[in-house]
Image (cartoon, rainbow, N blue to C red):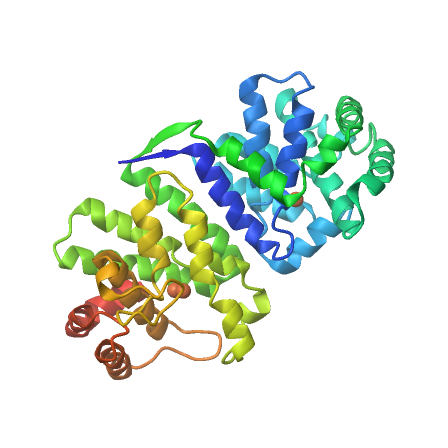
Length: 404
Ligand SMILES: [Fe+2]
Ligand SMILES: [Fe+2]
Ligand SMILES: [Fe+2]
């Protein structure tokens, strides 16, 4: 059982989704700030206002491709916008913890004059449309990138006003025009102010105990988001997770440890969401410049995971997977005595799975080659040689776990 906080999980999911934006790291946070400000003035309960904030942070959970994201933030209306709403809805509807957000996400690009005729509760319709409005204001902000926000605020307000009653609920447009008059509203969206705002909202607010089942559910939800961006990455992560849990269980670690290792394996590469699609899916070896970009991913995983209460160990096991026993790995250059056994297990599982998985530019290595490469990495103090010995002595079961 892990004591965590649902708000922190929402923030971590949102940090992960924002990575997809590559240059637009604050999109969902700006949307959350704006819709939270607007929702203060419409007739919603405190609980519903919390829902506005959480749903805003996750509103783009159906988008994991950097390519799709560019459309979403640069166009006011977009013909294929419904696809990511449906995807986001389906993802959240499966999760007990977040299923209440699903109908809201489904409609967050539906025009108001159509939305109020649909099968959605009046509260959810208003919340959904509030997110739509904030989201489109952010599209306009992005279109004016490089301009002083205070100089363009009036033209943005004018544009939104033109859609009163068509795209957006009249009541919401009136509230937006009211709150967006002040400089405070626009200046609060500068990254350094926004970061503080999010930190304040992150203070333990919704303590929650996750049992093993719920923990696996949450980790799978993170993995599914990665899957939408890169199928290779998620197939890899699922294999690493199974193999790490298999090794741990064979080494006599308890069930709790095995589940946590499974979660760490599922999450170890979530920082890859920040890597542009063309590098991640490149059908050939990476150039030095591309490799440098790729190298940031395990630190990104760490930054996201360590902010979740109760994830102290899991974040380390996951994020240390490119550290070497010799201290020459990255990003922290930790030595063997600083690397918990669980982290060393993830490292071995990571290399093993990558070798046995078919990749865009090559098929899986033969068992003999896998054995030789692991041995080389063990004897050169990259991987833990005892663990290398274990997987090499149990090649078949490890292979099955990594590729099942
Ligand atoms: Fe969006
Ligand atoms: Fe990695
Ligand atoms: Fe990996």
